[in-house]
Image (cartoon, rainbow, N blue to C red; front, side, top):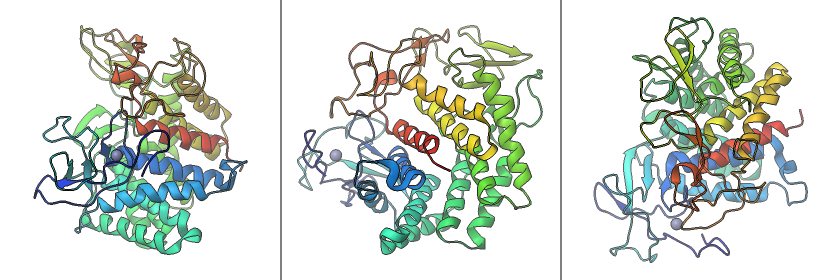
Length: 435
Ligand SMILES: [Zn+2]
């Protein structure tokens, strides 16, 4: 699809299957970032963000506008590509144009003519099954009135994905599968998806550190990374506690509901809130560590537990910015403020968003078109995108904040990545919701 004043219709020749060399029609969808590659997990988050706005605010999302129609059309555009990326066996492919053998060779414009040397590749490796089922089952709900046939088509795709294979039982994947199964139950009520969601949620409960670890008694309630990996879970995708909170709100009379509530409250009250209190901006640090080294600054909590505001890095380098990590927590906090009637959670949700638009050590807004002192984005193909959000402030080995003002050279802090838009839209739509 052409984007007026940005570029004409592009990549109509996507793409060559990496495994067989055959052409598969996977044109459409959204570019993910400051490049023109189309990762499924990241761009499906774009769809999730729009769908959350549609669900939480409905026609009031734009008081001067024409109602839900622009959102529905945009979601359908993205979802049409997602459906093309599902194999006949129900599994979902990873990306288009992601490059071959880990390189960046597919990151270019093409001539839109199939079958010549500039055609890009589709990576048919599995990725993002749980993330796929979530937007498709949300589409099924949002389209129930507007276009029921299309909603059923998307739900059928989610169901085929669900039947193709299960989660890998690590914390991240279980979070997505729990959320997805819950939304599939909302789209197609019955016992099977609901009981699957409860099973995944129980496995998530088992992965939470409810006792103090690391010879300290200050912080607990965070998740292990996997059943066989006790590394504290850190991921942009805050789907784990989010999934349990949504379970609590969807099934308040389920026998496990008290455990879901306790797990979310423990994570918020003994992990998120005390860690945020260590920042004068009240932002959520990247997380806790159960080991440290002498090359980097690890801030002590007690015993053998440390924390950092930013991720770990060696030498003079710095990490990728934390905007999705912060705004993912804003989503969780905003939803928790609704569920538990806690104004403190709402305030903390706002602090995470305010950091993104200027309440940070640089006084810099990281959203194009909003605020002041915006670093120039890394966006070599599309230029400035109004509303686009940069990766954000990263940290160096001494855990000091870094934000590049070098006019577009630093992808780690100044590239547009699409997950940020998802979490911003999701959080704002919750904070603006009239209950
Ligand atoms: Zn394109």
